[in-house]
Amino acid sequence: MRLLDLFCGAGGAAVGYHRAGFDEIVGVDIQPQPNYPFEFVQDDALAYLWLVADDGGRGFDAVHASPPCQAHSALGSLWKDREHPNLIPEIRDLLRRTGLPYVIENVPGAPLIDAVTLCGSMFGLGANRRQLRRHRLFECSFYVMRAPCQHQGQPVGVYGHGGGGSMTRGYKGTKAEYVEAMEMPWATKAEIAQAIPPAYTEHIGGYLRAVVERKDAVVSSEMPYKPMTNGCDLCGRSAPLSRVVLAPGGRKTLARVAYVCDAHGDPSGPVLRAPAATLAPGSRPLSPQSESLF
Image (cartoon, rainbow, N blue to C red; front, side):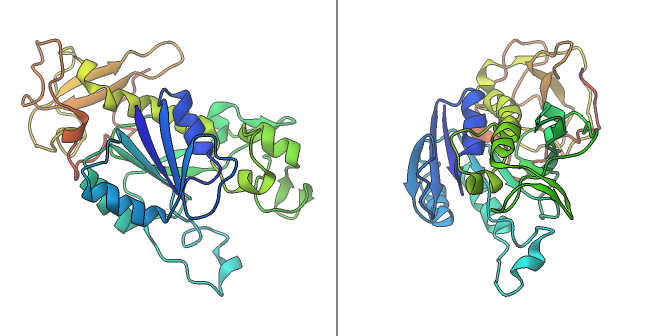
């Protein structure tokens, strides 16, 4: 499976998707990224996305984008003398034009739609008994579930280029603690400070991989009802929906599900009959609160 990683940085997101099963990843960033662990193209990521959208997806199966966050960051006051355009609306429009399943990642406060918030405490991340929290938002064109935050004790901060230790804003990690908390031993401290931990996109990548492999999904008629959605997850049609089990749950894992109308699957039949490319550009995923599937 081939994934395009836009505004890729040092590859924190890419490594997570690789763990989730994406075996071919192409990163694009306008800055040199000598430590990026996969194929890298130095180019303007927005211009590259225009080419992909105009070329019907260019052979990619999915796209991840992490546009600059300064326009939305709580630390934006540090860059008052610079202009920081909001690229998210244009990126979203282009991603929808590709017809591919997509993810947009950014910081709390960014204008994302139906975003899922992930936190390091959900994945047991941290260093020296301090938690990594590092909340990040993910707008996904497919359904993603998450566990609640598990905040306990003192967090470890991963930001900036200076030294570590106790700061006015709390405890800031050392280089070794950055590496341990973020699970990024290949990157420099400055690169880690700009990254997201691979655990986040490994979690999202499991759902994304299921969407790409949707032809293998099994239609379940156990709960044929219309849940809290904007319509069919594939075409957006407002109609009675059937639950599609993409992957079963276990004692410690969530089931992955989607909801489809009868145009894509017969509740009594074995297979969902629609490729991922038919995902409705305007459709929205289920609210994470709409169904508990432990």
